[in-house]
Image (cartoon, rainbow, N blue to C red; front, side):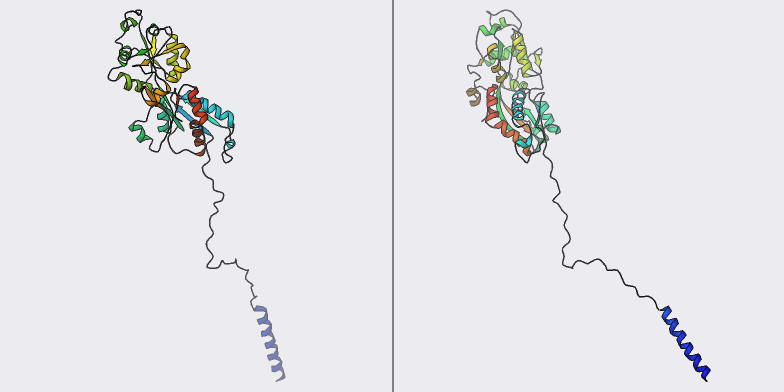
Length: 320
């Protein structure tokens, strides 16, 4: 009996030891990330670092050879005065002022505007309907007025005879009906008349055709000049030459040219502005779209007192 009792005690102790050794260890979970309250709005993207389109630091201007010299002169003054864009406005870039002016005719300037390869087209004619459709968002700036004159050099036979021509006489000269100066007047020498005109790239061709020639064509052997400067130079070089330099070019060479009135009306500033001298044309800067602040700053100068004074100084008619 005593032996049995001792056995039961031993068995009970063994069971307690076994239970203690086999009980699983307690695991303490790691703390989880805090959860935002249900009413917290979602985080918004940070837009403070977003950049707007940068302002251009170069302006490209292409087109009319008549307008190019005055725009070049204004651009040179603009660069010399400001040097860098931020001197005009502290919000502008600190880059050097760069304004590139290239002549090549109104047609080339307008094509460049259509292609989007220029910031401004220089033109001495209005856009036609097709061109307006191709530049639907363009902006047009009338910056001056120009006119075509009829001129010869001071040694030309016609210079000693008259300072006034009729439209009919001009048509006969430029069409070739008058082949020599003697055909114009028997008192003049029998020297061949040399007609100088602009090439097809210049708007002067259209202006002269519309306002003077009408249905008559300019003689086929007329010498075509690539610019108004070249046209004027050919008149100065040839005593038998006659052509239609712009009033700006004519005024710049007034000492060496005879500039004719037409039907008694001289190409004066007053007559050009009131329309009585009718061979006139607009001087335009055409932008293919909206201007940015840098481009607007240049247009403001062109149309302001300094720019308009330069048109006057160079023989053109200012609009302001």
